[in-house]
Length: 340
Ligand SMILES: Cc1cc2nc3c(=O)[nH]c(=O)nc-3n(C[C@H](O)[C@H](O)[C@H](O)COP(=O)(O)O)c2cc1C
Figure 1 (tube, rainbow, N blue to C red):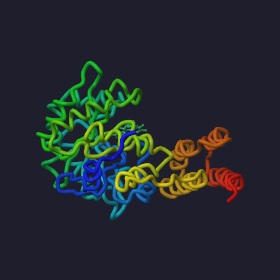
Figure 2 (figure 1 turned 180 degrees about the horizontal axis):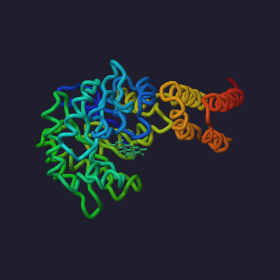
Figure 3 (figure 1 turned 90 degrees about the horizontal axis):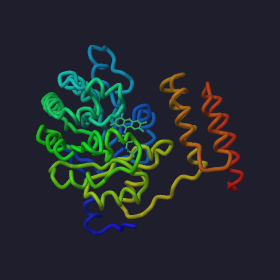
């Protein structure tokens, strides 16, 4: 296991500087489509008050000529530090959307250049920009020219293992004006499988001047520390480890700042969090929120006997009351069995 040297500890305790934005945490919550809405971010924020959080990715054309912003772009008043993530391949659309994001309260604007989904790459967005660096450069320049907050990029290491282009690509993004780059250490063809190849992140860090954030397989304080030690990255970004576990960013942040582990939540506390999440999704989105809550509930409910049966039931809830009733029974059962 890696231990924290004095030098690393002092680097990790200093603020992360993204252009003129100073963030007092080296742990970031990634953008997760269908997950990091306002409701989820409020939970993450409770445990990680200083970390940079991201909205879900927003299609730039979705915000053109609309009188009301789409709900996924909504940011709480005083929700800081917060980044709005955009995707598209048209520099002018992205510039316009970025201005709307800033008006909504974004402290930075992030451009998605890593999404592997066919529907998006076929239209020239997401990770397909790795194969079209000229357009990627034009996008960064256009957005930088349109807003006065830092513009950042989130991308992957390449298209396939035979086509790892991140070193040249990252340099180009920096030269075009990006103020930070997050590198997900997988190729587009890896999707979300196989280990993240952190060594490429180390190589990116070695050649850039702007902050480099490491992403991929950051699921615990130990993995965060290991990744920071191996790559020299300026920070780490948590993703799937936060599904059903909005405590993760705060736990890692606490560890990096103090060298001490936070006590993890008990099963009862996790179930209470699930119950609050469900209620808040209902309050914020109505019936659509209940459908979205099903998957969240299944992520929360694990690691105890009877979890799989409960997951099956939570997958089918149609009302907030159904979900609350199922969770209340389990919370009571856990309380009794743990002696509280
Ligand atoms: C359900 C889901 C939704 C995602 N949505 C986004 C997104 O909107 N924008 C983005 O840049 N990456 C998105 N990602 C990628 C993650 O942010 C992250 O780069 C990836 O999961 C690797 O980190 P991990 O190994 O810790 O999960 C998504 C991933 C998942 C699993």
